[in-house]
Length: 427
Image 1 (cartoon, rainbow, N blue to C red):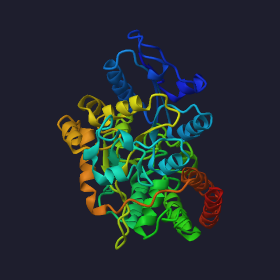
Image 2 (cartoon, one colour):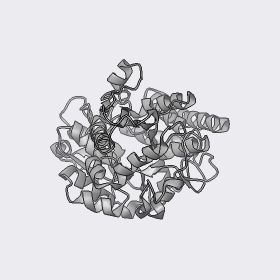
Image 3 (tube, rainbow, N blue to C red):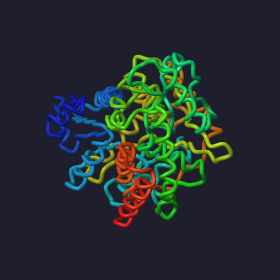
C-alpha cells in the first residue's frame, strides 16, 4: 500500500523521512519498482494526489509508492538537500521558475524519449510543451494551466457597501476601494486585502504592465531600484490608509493557503494562482469569488498563462519509465485526471479538459471560467528565469517585511536590487 504523509507537522515529526508500506503481491517487482513522489501544496492537493497514486498502484500489482508533501517555502530547501545528497524522489513537482536551474544542473532528466510511448501528451500543443522545455528538450509534464488571480470574500465586501475589484479595475481604483473598505468596515483587525508587496508573481505582473519584467532574455534583472521602491510605496500607502493588513499580520503568512491573511480571518482579499482557488475555498467557510489583478490604464497586459506545476523525473530515479507512466496517468488517463480535477490548473489536453468539464463543482467551474475570461489581459510568457530566481523570490518577501516594519521604500528597492544582483552573479 502507499503511505501518505498527510501534513507538514507529520513530515517534520518524522524527521523529513519518507514513510511507506509494501503491498503484498507479485514478488517479481524488484527494488527498482518503487516510486517516491514529492510535491508542495495544501491538504486538498494531498488528498487528491494520494488518491490518484493509489489508483495507479491498483493497476500495477506489487508496486510500492511513497508519497510526501509540504508547503512551498519548505519544499525547495528540502528538495535541494535531497538532490545534493543524490537521494531525490523519483517523481517531483516542478515549478517554471526552478525548472531551468534543475535541468541545467542535471538534477532532472529530459523526457523526449518517452513521447508517444509512456508519455502520451502530443495533444498538449506546442505552447504547453514549449513552456515545459529547456534548451529545446522537454523536462516537465504540464499538470495544468493557471494564472495569477485575486480571491475575495464577496460577503465581506458587500458588508461595507464597497464594490469589490473586478476585471479592468485600475491599481488606483483598487487602492481607493481598499481605503473605502477600511472606513466602512466594522470588524476588528480586518482589512480589505493582504499586503502583496512580498509576493513575486504580483510584483512581476505590476512590472509587466509597465513594460518591464523580473528578468530579461539574458537572465539579468529587468527592473531597477526605483521600480521596486514604487511597488513598496504603493503597498505602504495602502497600509497607511488601513486598506491592507498590518506588518505583524502579514508576517504570519508562510506562503501557504492555510496561513494567508484571508484564511486566518484578517483580510477579505488575497493573491494566489488561479488553481489555488479550489484549495482556498476548501479552507474558508465564506463564499469566495475570483477576479483578475488590477491594470495600468494604457499599460501592457500583466497576466500570462503558465504551467501551474509540472511533473519532472529526477536523475536519481531508479525506474524513470515507471515514474513517467504515473505522471501520464495523472494528466492523460481519464481515471487519474478525474481524481485530480482542476486543483492544479486547467488540463493542458483538450480531451481531458472536456472530460473534467462535465463534472466540475461550482468552485472548479469558477476557476475554469476565470481562465477563459482572462484572455484580454494576457501577454506572452516571460523569459525563462535564471538560476537563483527562486532564492530572489524569498529575498523579496523578506525585504517587503522590513519595509513594512519601518525601512523606507527607497532602502528596500536598493537592497532588493543589490541582493538580487549578487545572487545572479554567483550563478
